Amino acid sequence: MTYTVYRIKNFIRGILNTEYGIPNRGATLLDTIVGTALMLVIFLGIAAAFILSVDVVTNNKARGSAIALANERLEYIRSLTYSAIGTSGGIPSGSIAQSEIVTLNGIPFTRRTLIEYADDPRDGTGASDSNNITSDFKVVKVDVAWTTRTGTRHITLVSRFEPPSGMEIACTPPCGTLTISTVDSGSQPLAGASVSIINPSTTPAISINTFTNASGTASFIGAPAAAGYRIVVTKTGYSTAQTYSATSQNTNPNPSHLTVSNNQTTTGTFQIDVLSSLTVNTYSHNNNTWTDTFSDSSKVAPASTNIEVSGNRARFAGNQPWTAPAQLFSVDIMPSALSRWGVFSWNDTKPSETTIIYHVYYPTGSGRALVPDTYLPGNSAGFASASTSVDVSTIPASTYPSLILEAYLVALNPSAPSPSIEDWSLTYESGTTIGITFSLRGAKTIGSGPSGPVYKYDQNHTSSGGTMSLQNLEWDSYTMTVADTTGYDISSSCTPQPISLAPNSSATVRLFFSPDSVNSLLVDVRSGTGAFISGASIRLTKGGSYDATKVSDVCGQTLFSALTNGNYSLEVSAPGYQTFTSSGVDVTGTTNYSVSLQ
Figure (cartoon, rainbow, N blue to C red):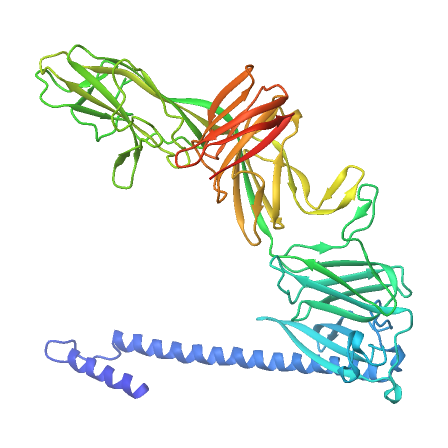
């Protein structure tokens, strides 16, 4: 490589030293750059080699020290009698520390010792053991860990200790086998999970911290027969599963602490998975109106043609004769936190031999398109004549979060006075962020008590500025509620409750609130696949005393408030679905009802 660079330098220098080049008067800029680059490469290589050699020497020194510490522990164990081989708080028990910090040659090490009984397959295992003694020998594993610049390193030594004269010695009776099995949310074995086993009622007391093997289990042969084995299973970034004590609130814990019986195997299965997060946005439900009084053209889209805005009205541009129709478009109307659309209204003047036809559009990537008649009947033909408004609440806000108003002005007589629009408006429901306290409860239970089920997760939270971010949540189905003392009812929830939170996922929920009423009914409408349906017609009746029809909002829900308690009839319909009817909707207090359309 050096020779090649030398040849290139000489070639370039030869060109520069021609009669048109620069005379060679010493080191050129090119020489300096190439030389510096070569020196940099050389010195970087030397530095990297030096750092690598230092790491190798340091790690070899640390590794040698770690091996010495592991051998030291094994040699000490070999000096003990077979019955004395055990760890403090372990199974089998003894005087050896399960974990300790040891410094050697200026390096701190963590030395962990695991001692457990093992079942020799030569005489059968478990219930098939020929002599019913499964504690055939002891296995000792010594792990020594230390920290380097690149992370934590380990060395592990394993040794097998046979009972005296090869005679099998059962554990001190009464005793049995305790097996902890850990699986994920899909019931697949989970290796490397941390398992804590504590039982203060045994003599000596048991306190073990270990990890599950490749099969997701941690098994302890020779566990003293006793009740009250407290188990906690977790893993970094995962949820926690455990056994529970009986309390005055949780009189029937499930799972309760485990019991090991003599010559029996007790197995506890615990399910954990990666934690998730949930963001909750809270809004008060408000009625709003978009209006254009044509005081200027700021709310008129540039796509409008042959339109003039002046004198608080929109009309034909210029003067008679009117040789072509005019078309007026509003700007895109896109409310934040939209819940549902309301009513499109207008005030206009149509002299004789003129007409104005109104339509509702929605923006597309390349322009705009008419809202289909499926959602707004008559829209393709337009709305005109004596009408001054049209109900657009049937337009699903989830599908059409933005609308455009359009007016088509026509003069049948070119000399007729210009038709004009004095104002037009569009009402809608949307949310304003509010801070509110709500309760979040999961479906998983850990027992029951005098007040009913005891839930694993049941906490109150307050959204600050309308937003609450909840981290480290276990996968579960969560339901949110608000107390009457807040003065609000949940009038809509995107997504509909209960909220199914999968492992290792993030979800965002929008909660809309309306003033509290003693009796209310929140109806959510979903398809057969569980997707919410926006724009569905929901009619609620109670004999001749109540009859109201509403449209499901962007979340596929609608709230009927200020009801009297009792039995109601419900009719739900949506384009493309069969009509649902029910005469058995009982409303008492805050009531939720879910409808599935096929």
